[in-house]
Length: 408
Image (cartoon, rainbow, N blue to C red; front, side, top):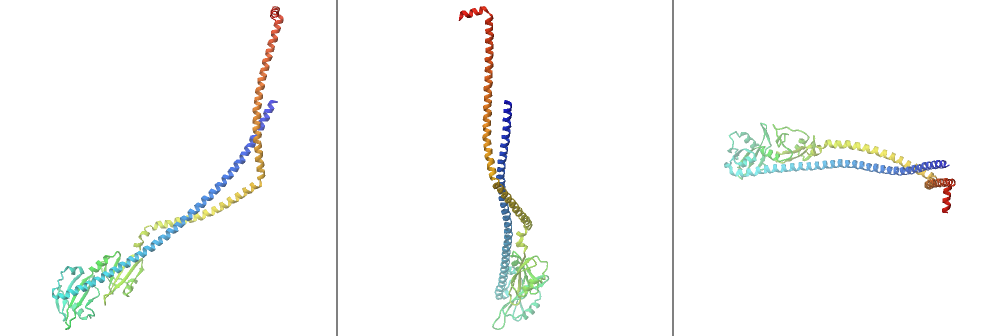
């Protein structure tokens, strides 16, 4: 009987353990549901932040491109301003140079026969030859021994509307020269004419002070002065030189170079100034990073495609997550009553399990007491047997009986 009770108790406890395990599984599923819900929210937040980051990267790239264009525009404007400033400075310096020649000839005409060609001032002004003529075109003084008959003929053909006359720049043996004349008018009709022959050294020096390439052309499209190294005088005919010789002033782009051109008014024989430079000069800081810009374009395209794909996947994942959450919420509403009842049953089973545990402990205590009682009864039985044997021995022994009688 005791064995059957024990077996029944074991079966009940095993069933209770299974029920408890089922309850724990339900609790685990509830926890998993909450964890999955939190994980889904975190995933959506991470994707949202990633999308914002990708959009920020694209906007930053667009900002860089716009900044590069803005910088390019600023560099171009600054380049053109410097180009035109250099042109105007060269023009002013050239005009000042001819004005200085005019003043020098005025002083020299007063000297008449005392002109010194070795004067350092002549060297600084690029004067190579000097001659003084009277009103009858006779040579009073000349610094060279060459025949000045061509100069006489040229003076006779000149009309001195002003005392200072500048002839056009001519080319001789791949070198450019210019003749200058200064005439003094007197009341008696007599006068003196001073002649200078100048080279292009001073003009080249003035152009060399420019940070850009600079040329001076005559009216026949020849480069008569330049800050470039020229093996021979160049002949330049293009859209820019045509505009220059038409008397235009401006700045134009022509064949990857900016040209800023003007003319210098020398009465009948003006000269034409052209200051220019390749556009790569001002674009050099940007061209240096040209490869990086192309690489940035490529990265931008990849990022854009990645962001578009990411947004698409995010929307699909979000929709699926919302659908799954809606289904789980509907199931929770549908089986809410059953879930509550199960929880109550599990709570009662916990109480029953505790009671059975206490009953099991009580049964163990009862078994212990029972064993003690059985042991005590066994001792008493043995005692009684011993006493009975003692009585039998007394009955058989007469002497002992007498002793016992005497005592009692």
